[in-house]
Length: 264
Ligand SMILES: NC(=O)c1ccc[n+]([C@@H]2O[C@H](COP(=O)([O-])OP(=O)(O)OC[C@H]3O[C@@H](n4cnc5c(N)ncnc54)[C@H](OP(=O)(O)O)[C@@H]3O)[C@@H](O)[C@H]2O)c1
Image 1 (tube, rainbow, N blue to C red):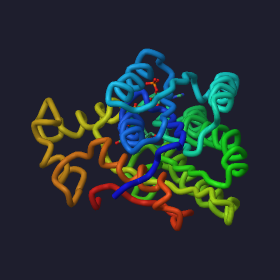
Image 2: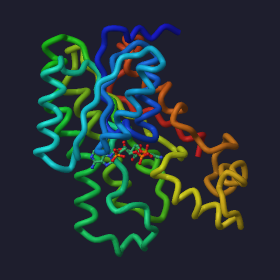
Image 3: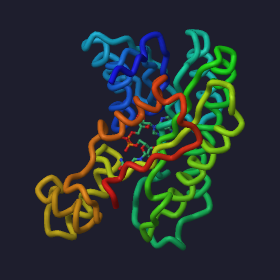
């Protein structure tokens, strides 16, 4: 399928690593100019270099999206360079990491920090880039949410709540943008091997007596995580769906949430 992303500019937040990196490489492979973003300049530049080495076009912006000043500065840069037709709100995770404390012990500060990292950062970026999409009469906003927003493991309630809010924000946006040529959707991601999920995968592997999750990947996927596909996901499992939603092929798709979690 030709996704015809040539001539489109795509900002992928948090694309210096993990799922975002996979999305950046895939969108670039389909012809988009990708604006790689992360906090770490070297890692972000490294992904941009991978894109250009493969014959694609890439730019780099850096900044912490939990800082209003840094967010404004990097968005000034993006807008000055031509804005973005495609926005992938991918940066996120759990503030302070996935430590498995009892759910009632998660502090209010952590709830707020996780909400800021996943939801308010995406709201701020969206608010600055959507006006340009509206002027051009075409655009895509895609949120990388999580399947834990839909089925609840017994921890990380702050993270689950934030990811559910992202799905709701995408739906509200889709309604607000109705008829404009700009669509908004979310993807509820299952368990994908990335630097952020490494500690969780290792903790789960330990329950099977393994010191490395890769040695028990099939058993981990089917018995511990109860997936129907016997392997742990990889960033490209998500990136293909994002590339489709980002493309003109998905003109008829808005306000939806696609679950990619191996059938948990
Ligand atoms: N991995 C999974 O199993 C899984 C499952 C469901 C949902 N998700 C979601 O998928 C998204 C990507 O996760 P991942 O597993 O790929 O994580 P990752 O490998 O740790 O990558 C996170 C990315 O976000 C950036 N980032 C983190 N905090 C940031 C901040 N405050 N400001 C700006 N950028 C920031 C990082 O940039 P630097 O490294 O440059 O700092 C990095 O590029 C997240 O929204 C996560 O909630 C992941």
